[in-house]
Length: 271
Image 1 (tube, rainbow, N blue to C red):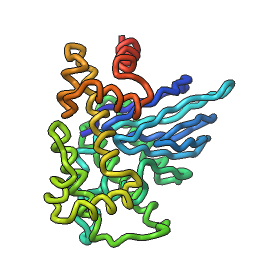
Image 2: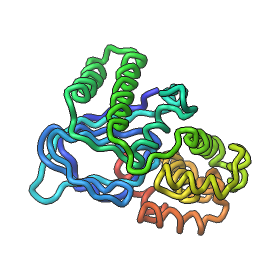
Image 3: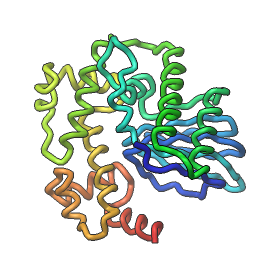
């Protein structure tokens, strides 16, 4: 089910790092902008299509004198996690996209991409639509991107049968982040050794399993910060980080700001 769609004219100089549980899409229409995504800096110009996956730390900004217009779409991926793109794997479409292009995907937009993005925006702007209409177009866009990814053979292709282990690990984290998670617990769930699982996860996701769990939890903490009645101590407890000092250090390590500073910035921005 989609959460919200944004259309913006100009990007402010907003270098602070943030992340979302939603998928994020940009289609640059004119001008230039820059993005830091998972430690990689990219410079974007008209015609660029960028898709940022959930739970990826990123920022976007303009350099002095620049302006930029673009389509910007946020959507939750839940509805697409039951769609299997191939009979040869149990991975859902979002995980398949992650395996093909971890962290973010970038390409020069083609006619089909532009038409699909434009149709989503037009439908949303009309104010007269059903969620299923937009979801059908989003699904078509995701399948098109997956097809484009597959046209570029990976440098070191991994057996597709291994995808189910990583996909199951991702599902386990999504369902258990609020509890203590041991690597052995996930490995037992997918019926392989923890050492083998960690190696597979890093190969597919280009990030260690432990680091991914931490980023996922911090993302959930940021969502909970929207509830002003919750203290930071309560929030850290809800993501299974009972030690608030450890929570603060982990948050700063991932986001580059303390939890209190980030929450203050968030609340001021949404007043």
